[in-house]
Image (tube, rainbow, N blue to C red; front, side, top):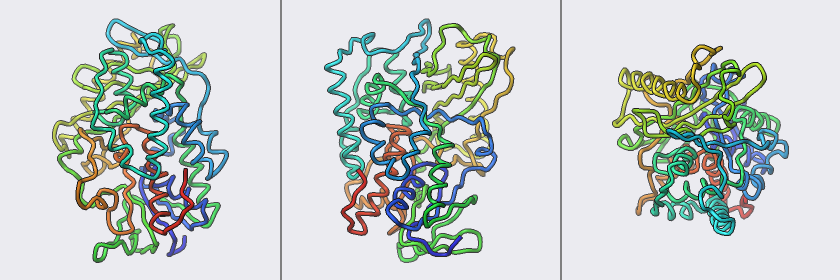
Amino acid sequence: MKRTYDIAGFGEGLSGLLACALLAARGFSCLWIDTAPEQETQEQDLTIPALITSVAWERSLKQSILQVDTHLGEALDKSTKKVQCIIPGRRTNLSPGDYGMNQTMLKKHVETYLKLIDSAKTNPSALYRRIVFRPRVGNPCLDTVMKGLSRSFNPGFPGYLRMLSSFQGLYVLDRIRFKSMLLDFISGTRGDHTRAQKPDIVVSNGEAVGLRLEDIIIKARYYFTEEKKHPDKNNNTGFLLHGQRVFETRVIPAPMGDILFISPPEGLESPIVAIASISNESTTLSYVTKVDCGVKASGLVLRERIRSASEMVLSRLRDVIPFMDDFTIKGYTLDPSDSGDIRPYHAVSKNPAQPPLFNKKRFFLSADNAFLCDRQKYEWLDIEGEILWGIHSANAVLNAMHRSDMIM
């Protein structure tokens, strides 16, 4: 590992890592420091649900991402999936015709979504201008899907458009494989990647001048970080809860789908999104939901909220899969906390922050030449937003350098 790079960044998400890889493809030397707990990446069967609408990938995101490596698309499972919504008393296979959505109107909304995300690659205001309008979704199934596909408690109009676009099909991203391929690409160019718990950006007179990694200072022209210098303590009031259960396939109800949007458990307000990998002998169910803490929680209060939320989720899954406990082989829940606080990558805001009217650059920068790559910037769109913000972050660096070869 060198002591000087063009770009240096750290985090456990995809935004900053993808931004580094995109810039490495432009010839920049990049260092990425992975801060995810090592035991999580060592779990070979770990699958965090990451759903990408097929239309967003095929007609927008793919064109940008494959500039890094044409093999990155192999991290996507594009096979046809049966998508179901499960609410009390109903288990419904999703299709636009079932909800009075004709193809002409659906196509119009999909085109609006594609224009929106294409613009957001270089201009965040294109997306932020549209979040003011919050559509009313009267159908409980559509509402469950819309909220499940958003990382925010309030999906807004962008989340509404993404939900409608999901009728065109959903791909499943193997997040760990995708991340590994990006890291390998960076190392195979002029860059490096390593692992550390918590690097710090060294700031002098408002400008980032280095990245402290234990007793080493790494110098770079530009930096990426998930850590906000002044986090909004009143806004980050929730967390993502991921879990997985493996059980014998014979306990699975016959009509169960591959991708499930399950109405919220009692005591929680957000749906559960689950992906079922079914084989003859066993089935792996990977799931995620959003948990509202109500107030800024830490320490023992946070631990208790994680424990109680886990029990609520399992209780709801037992409604969907009766006798699940009797046929469970193994299961676990990911810990979204670190040192008594919610890890930045797993934090969820009640109401997503917007760029202020004045001093907007501090919304995007932790310090001069240090770009924020937290998942919450485009969180209405979940994993698509995370990828999209990575593309934007790479473009922000190119723009700072007065380059014209933007990533589109």
